Length: 164
Ligand SMILES: CC(C)(COP(=O)(O)OP(=O)(O)OC[C@H]1O[C@@H](n2cnc3c(N)ncnc32)[C@H](O)[C@@H]1OP(=O)(O)O)[C@@H](O)C(=O)NCCC(=O)NCCS
Image (cartoon, rainbow, N blue to C red; front, side, top):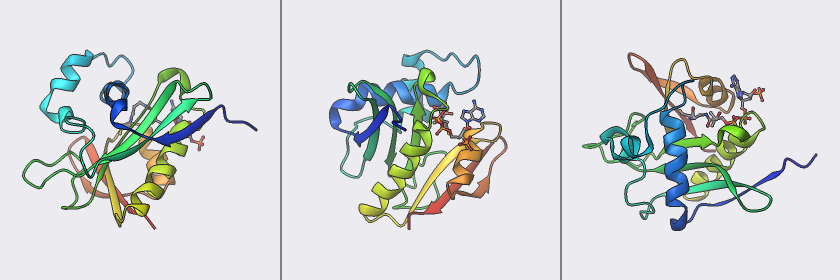
């Protein structure tokens, strides 16, 4: 069956849409309504996108067949002295994922996740990590796709997997 979406490599010109998806990720909880500018300016979220697309940044955008973007997953390498929530080591990229609300639960997220793992492998990254709040169902998706918890925080877990 036609899934109704396709994946393409993220480009520098996708920065605004990636910002939209970062806001979705930050506001994942029902009723989460942090305004866009507040999320994108906050120190904890800004680091995942500021200056996109840096040399080691890479990602995928899911689009409707007409080309309209509906979701994205990307990764970025953050330094040890300014790590992300999901930092596991230098040279291990951390991923971020978001799907437009109208497109959720239709396989876009799983497809983006699988594609991003392959992309990371093709770029020579042996591992990839992420951070997820413990009550976010996305945790089950990550586990089903081979991620394991490597560190537990008070409310969020760091997960990682090998790319091959
Ligand atoms: C998490 C997210 C990226 C997943 O993308 P998606 O396109 O909705 O996911 P998929 O359709 O590929 O579904 C993946 C699995 O999650 C399950 N799932 C989807 N929506 C769900 C929901 N609301 N509650 C529980 N499970 C759900 C699906 O059933 C599927 O599992 P299954 O195939 O075994 O049934 C997307 O829902 C999203 O953007 N959420 C808000 C932002 C966010 O939480 N980002 C991650 C922060 S760490």
